[in-house]
Image 1 (cartoon, one colour):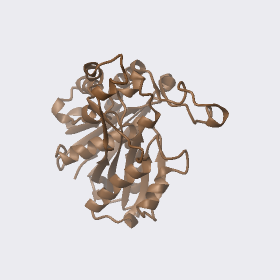
Image 2 (cartoon, one colour; image 1 turned 120 degrees about the vertical axis):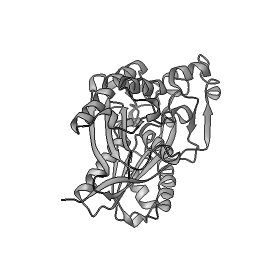
Image 3 (cartoon, one colour; image 1 turned 60 degrees about the vertical axis):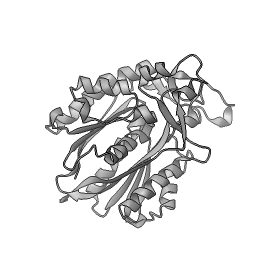
Image 4 (cartoon, one colour; image 1 turned 135 degrees about the horizontal axis):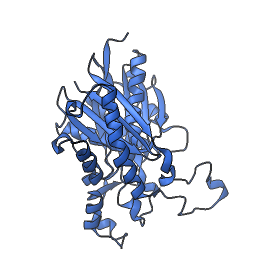
Length: 331
């Protein structure tokens, strides 16, 4: 029987150099204005990958800094779990390249695609693995996305939201009673087709056709996404709290997938969580998909939003639609 917890002992993130303001975007999206984008999403700007950026290099830059800050060698890492739906290649997994470049020669690798809930899923998989096998002393959990390589810049349903970046959490063994408490997941696939990217999949291989804007850019039904999120995310969080005999008042701080500021505010109000119990960055960096929770966690730590002893809730929604939440006690 294990006598330790598995906690988040280090965080970090990387954002590309290119910044796109709403004013910049509206030079392409001629039928909207900056004020409309803010009213609909809360987003003022987003980060756009440069030609030299890749999922692997953004992940490596962020993870290397976290390892150095925590005086951890690549040889100490037992697992690398990467959440993404925009890796360098279809295969091999991008986690393999990250393992190679960081010299984590003893680390198991896994790529995870549960869309925007990917970071929460990866945290859970990594912490479960560490609790089963105590020889895995440290894990790197990485969320990374290059959304903008798959976005039609003239599609206002997607272009106003999505951004690029990487977020990293270093997991380690902590005192018993600290670290992850539990997780909960839920899938409502009734509107499975509402958010999708079909190009390159085995049903739409490049080998049998030419480029098609209808297939080879991300598609999103914003109304269906909103309905799914506002219906299922509060249910998911309440179910998780019930499972572990906790109440929403027992949560000190909440970090949500940064999809849309209005959505976060709606869910907070529905759960009667006061505004001071969260931190948001969607206004300044947009929706970074699988990297979103990792980046907002990293910034929350930098700005001292999470205190020692705090009980913290992570929650998100991704295409499919899949929902994930987990609760952690920070040391």
